[in-house]
Amino acid sequence: MLIPCLACESRFVPDEYFRACSDYNRGLDLVSWTCPRCGNRDDLRVLPGELGFGYPYRGRFAVDDRLRVPGLSRKRGDLRLDISLDAGRWRVSTRIRQFI
Image 1 (cartoon, rainbow, N blue to C red):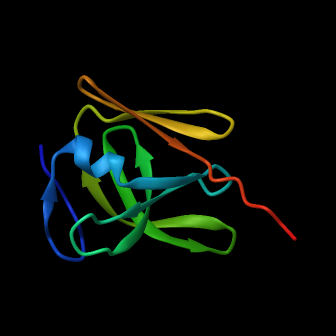
Image 2 (cartoon, rainbow, N blue to C red; image 1 turned 30 degrees about the vertical axis):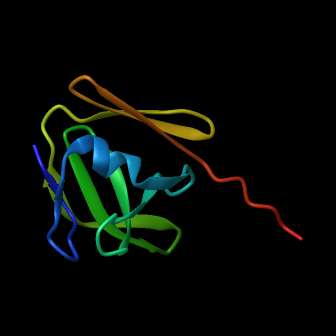
């Protein structure tokens, strides 16, 4: 299975795609992803069997587009999201923000 970048249409194997995830926002249940080829940044929600693309809206994440990824699963932790697909496992941590 190849997962596309919605901006440049490059396609990635799951390991390359999920390694490009940089931050998990547990409050909105979204993951930040940056395309390794074009640099486009997307927010997405990892759901059982699919990825949901959208944007934050009125305190929640509104999913506009869905991409089916059969076998995709997730488990939420306090400061992380664990993603599984076939034999692959990825952990996306919450980036701790410091307020000054």
